[in-house]
Image (spheres, rainbow, N blue to C red):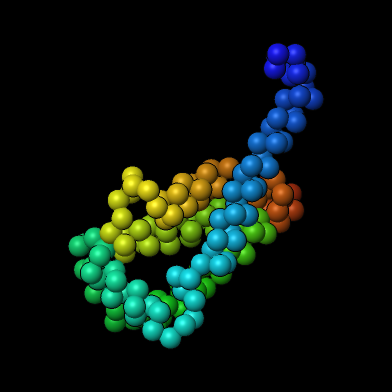
Amino acid sequence: MSSDLVNPDDPVDKTSVRSSRRWLFVLVRVYLGISFLFSDHGSVQPNELTGFLKFALRNGYVWYQNLLNSVVVPHSSTFGALVVIAEIYVGIGLVLGFTTRLAALVALFLLLNYMCAKGALPWGPGIDQSDIVLAVVILFSDAGRTFGLDKLIARRFPKLWVL
Protein backbone atom coordinates (compact mmCIF):
# COMPACT_ATOMS: atom_id res chain seq x y z
CA MET A 1 0.00 0.00 0.00
CA SER A 2 2.79 2.44 0.81
CA SER A 3 4.42 1.65 -2.52
CA ASP A 4 1.36 3.19 -4.20
CA LEU A 5 2.02 6.49 -2.40
CA VAL A 6 5.68 6.98 -3.34
CA ASN A 7 7.08 6.17 -6.74
CA PRO A 8 10.84 5.47 -6.34
CA ASP A 9 11.48 6.60 -9.91
CA ASP A 10 9.82 9.98 -9.41
CA PRO A 11 12.53 12.67 -8.82
CA VAL A 12 10.06 14.95 -7.06
CA ASP A 13 9.34 12.31 -4.41
CA LYS A 14 13.08 11.70 -3.83
CA THR A 15 13.69 15.42 -3.41
CA SER A 16 10.85 15.85 -0.95
CA VAL A 17 12.04 12.88 1.12
CA ARG A 18 15.59 14.28 1.24
CA SER A 19 14.24 17.69 2.18
CA SER A 20 12.14 16.27 5.01
CA ARG A 21 15.19 14.39 6.33
CA ARG A 22 17.21 17.59 6.35
CA TRP A 23 14.55 19.25 8.47
CA LEU A 24 15.07 16.53 11.07
CA PHE A 25 18.72 17.60 11.32
CA VAL A 26 17.58 21.20 11.74
CA LEU A 27 15.25 20.19 14.57
CA VAL A 28 18.09 18.31 16.28
CA ARG A 29 20.38 21.33 15.86
CA VAL A 30 17.86 23.80 17.26
CA TYR A 31 16.92 21.49 20.15
CA LEU A 32 20.55 21.06 21.24
CA GLY A 33 21.17 24.80 20.86
CA ILE A 34 18.20 25.66 23.05
CA SER A 35 19.29 23.14 25.65
CA PHE A 36 22.71 24.83 25.81
CA LEU A 37 21.14 28.28 26.12
CA PHE A 38 19.07 27.09 29.07
CA SER A 39 21.73 24.89 30.66
CA ASP A 40 22.89 25.59 34.16
CA HIS A 41 26.45 24.29 33.89
CA GLY A 42 27.99 27.69 33.60
CA SER A 43 25.43 30.22 34.72
CA VAL A 44 27.23 33.05 36.38
CA GLN A 45 26.06 32.35 39.91
CA PRO A 46 28.61 32.76 42.69
CA ASN A 47 30.24 29.49 43.81
CA GLU A 48 28.41 27.39 41.20
CA LEU A 49 31.64 26.28 39.57
CA THR A 50 33.18 25.63 42.98
CA GLY A 51 30.27 23.36 43.87
CA PHE A 52 30.50 21.54 40.55
CA LEU A 53 34.26 21.08 40.96
CA LYS A 54 33.76 19.61 44.45
CA PHE A 55 31.22 17.19 42.97
CA ALA A 56 33.58 16.29 40.11
CA LEU A 57 36.50 15.75 42.48
CA ARG A 58 34.37 13.21 44.38
CA ASN A 59 32.56 11.51 41.49
CA GLY A 60 34.59 12.01 38.31
CA TYR A 61 37.00 9.61 36.71
CA VAL A 62 40.31 9.42 38.61
CA TRP A 63 42.37 10.66 35.68
CA TYR A 64 39.90 13.53 35.24
CA GLN A 65 40.11 14.43 38.94
CA ASN A 66 43.89 14.73 38.53
CA LEU A 67 43.41 17.00 35.52
CA LEU A 68 40.96 19.17 37.44
CA ASN A 69 43.29 19.47 40.43
CA SER A 70 46.32 20.38 38.37
CA VAL A 71 44.76 22.63 35.71
CA VAL A 72 41.22 23.78 36.43
CA VAL A 73 41.13 24.37 40.21
CA PRO A 74 44.08 26.82 40.21
CA HIS A 75 42.38 28.83 37.44
CA SER A 76 38.73 28.24 38.30
CA SER A 77 37.53 31.79 37.63
CA THR A 78 39.02 31.71 34.13
CA PHE A 79 37.53 28.29 33.38
CA GLY A 80 34.16 29.40 34.77
CA ALA A 81 34.09 32.33 32.34
CA LEU A 82 35.20 30.10 29.45
CA VAL A 83 32.38 27.62 30.15
CA VAL A 84 29.79 30.39 30.15
CA ILE A 85 31.15 31.86 26.90
CA ALA A 86 31.35 28.42 25.24
CA GLU A 87 27.79 27.48 26.22
CA ILE A 88 26.41 30.79 24.97
CA TYR A 89 28.34 30.41 21.70
CA VAL A 90 27.12 26.82 21.21
CA GLY A 91 23.54 27.82 21.95
CA ILE A 92 23.49 30.79 19.60
CA GLY A 93 25.53 29.01 16.90
CA LEU A 94 23.25 25.98 16.82
CA VAL A 95 19.96 27.88 17.03
CA LEU A 96 20.91 30.26 14.23
CA GLY A 97 22.84 27.69 12.20
CA PHE A 98 25.98 29.84 12.36
CA THR A 99 29.34 27.99 12.21
CA THR A 100 27.31 24.89 13.01
CA ARG A 101 30.06 22.30 12.80
CA LEU A 102 32.41 24.33 14.98
CA ALA A 103 29.61 24.82 17.50
CA ALA A 104 28.96 21.05 17.45
CA LEU A 105 32.67 20.40 18.13
CA VAL A 106 32.64 22.82 21.07
CA ALA A 107 29.44 21.15 22.32
CA LEU A 108 31.14 17.74 22.10
CA PHE A 109 34.11 19.02 24.09
CA LEU A 110 31.87 20.47 26.80
CA LEU A 111 29.62 17.41 26.97
CA LEU A 112 32.55 15.00 27.22
CA ASN A 113 33.93 17.10 30.07
CA TYR A 114 30.58 17.08 31.87
CA MET A 115 30.31 13.33 31.46
CA CYS A 116 33.85 12.76 32.79
CA ALA A 117 33.23 15.11 35.71
CA LYS A 118 30.17 13.09 36.69
CA GLY A 119 31.99 9.77 36.27
CA ALA A 120 29.20 8.60 33.97
CA LEU A 121 29.58 5.55 31.78
CA PRO A 122 29.84 6.50 28.10
CA TRP A 123 27.41 3.74 27.09
CA GLY A 124 25.00 4.33 29.97
CA PRO A 125 21.83 6.36 29.93
CA GLY A 126 22.12 10.06 30.59
CA ILE A 127 21.51 13.47 29.16
CA ASP A 128 25.18 14.10 28.40
CA GLN A 129 25.50 10.84 26.48
CA SER A 130 22.38 11.49 24.41
CA ASP A 131 23.46 15.08 23.73
CA ILE A 132 26.84 13.75 22.57
CA VAL A 133 25.02 11.60 20.01
CA LEU A 134 23.02 14.64 18.86
CA ALA A 135 26.20 16.74 18.55
CA VAL A 136 27.84 14.02 16.43
CA VAL A 137 24.76 13.89 14.17
CA ILE A 138 24.92 17.67 13.75
CA LEU A 139 28.67 17.56 13.10
CA PHE A 140 28.30 15.11 10.21
CA SER A 141 25.16 16.60 8.67
CA ASP A 142 24.39 19.79 6.77
CA ALA A 143 22.13 21.04 9.55
CA GLY A 144 23.45 24.60 9.33
CA ARG A 145 23.27 24.78 5.57
CA THR A 146 19.69 23.56 5.40
CA PHE A 147 18.03 26.37 7.30
CA GLY A 148 20.54 28.67 8.91
CA LEU A 149 23.07 31.40 8.41
CA ASP A 150 25.59 28.83 7.20
CA LYS A 151 23.59 28.51 3.99
CA LEU A 152 24.22 32.19 3.22
CA ILE A 153 27.89 32.02 4.17
CA ALA A 154 28.43 28.78 2.20
CA ARG A 155 27.47 30.55 -1.02
CA ARG A 156 30.46 32.84 -0.58
CA PHE A 157 32.82 30.31 1.05
CA PRO A 158 31.69 26.82 -0.10
CA LYS A 159 34.74 24.94 1.27
CA LEU A 160 34.72 26.46 4.76
CA TRP A 161 34.59 23.43 7.07
CA VAL A 162 33.01 25.13 10.12
CA LEU A 163 29.68 25.60 8.33
